[in-house]
Picture 1: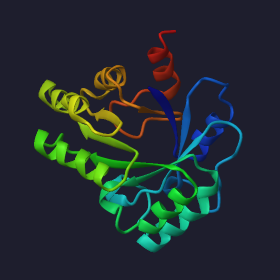
Picture 2: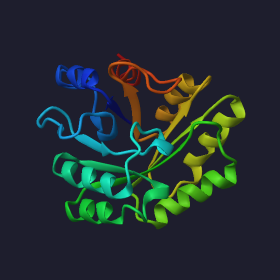
Picture 3: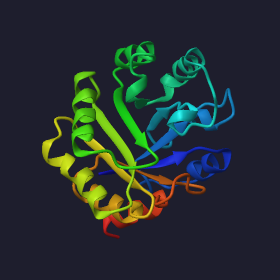
Picture 4: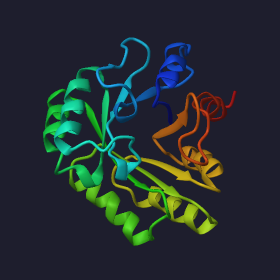
Length: 211
């Protein structure tokens, strides 16, 4: 039940560098949101490396080749690497390099419009496992208890560790619930939210720690 602070701007990086020990467990380096050439500072928290394209909620319209270059440049600083599940084949070189460095691989899936059907969600979990992911991260829009229930059901049948988050009207409440039910990685903002229903990472850590 780890908390991840998202570094998606220079302002968020400034907050991250000032965090005391134990305030979060990981930091996510959103390379698509940060100035090119900037690298994750070492020695503060373990880094999860992410480079998203626009369709995945990213901030840049980078080609696959450019994304691979940015991933490869930042891999030496990472402890985990997060690649959208649908991009696994296109970014196979990144995954191979991550494995060579013995980094854990997070396969992620985002749906900013809805929560898919139970069958679709189970298929995604199975596909992530089949493609060698160590963790499957899923974030969907949650507008009803049924949406939350479909995500909650995944924990009973999952064959690999899950990181599950809701966005939208039921996002904040569902994130606490999912963390308590075994969500491995639980993301929060450091400077300002980037999706509805997101907690501050520091506040989320405090709540989950019971302090």
